[in-house]
Image (cartoon, rainbow, N blue to C red; front, top):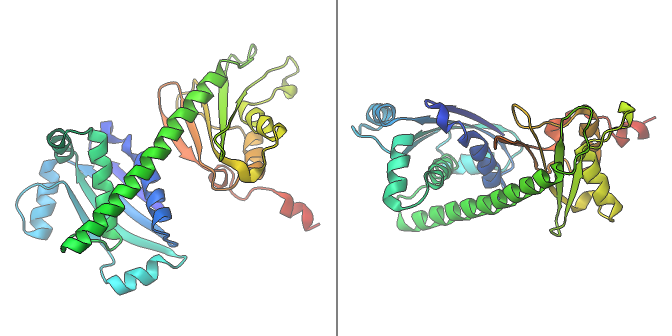
Length: 288
């Protein structure tokens, strides 16, 4: 899965991570097996009006336009459910329309930006609203995706708050670099970890490993872990060290969301497989 994101205004770059998360959630909800590639661009009314005029012969701005590279519904359905890379197409969203419509409908700009992305994405996946039945189906799926994303966003934000609390327990007199981590289990329990330093530097322990070991000492197993968050006072989102990546790759499921954050509110979500590709694991030992 790949998302090629661009924005003419830097202030909207914050939507890249959310669009990526929604993209993943959409594939999960619709049980799509292929690895789709989508391009999304946030542009102004002037730019989207020109696109609308050139390709649809409609001389006015609109909120979102999708250009599907695969428009044969029968072939599309066959392709989506095979494990292969598929270029789905391009989505153009007008940030001017999004801001205006958010005010008109009485909800947040964020809600409108997310709605327009999901709407455009579903068009690339073969959905339309030309007929009432199709419209009802498409809008029901949109709401399901958006609600699911909101629930996960709330969980993510609360988990980052827990990691921030854990950071207060850091013992880091040597590096002055305090890190907090929080590990959420499927039963709702959260286990905290902070970095603990020692004058013998090699004996220091990172926040991520402390959180994982804390959970395991309370009887939790790999299959119990749902997501993890870590936070520090870094320029960009805080990233685990190599040792933590090795432990994470072995003790957390490969698709576990890991939310890396900093004190400025920046968050990047990844997973163990992305953190440590081609990881050394128990399989390498068993082959000996």
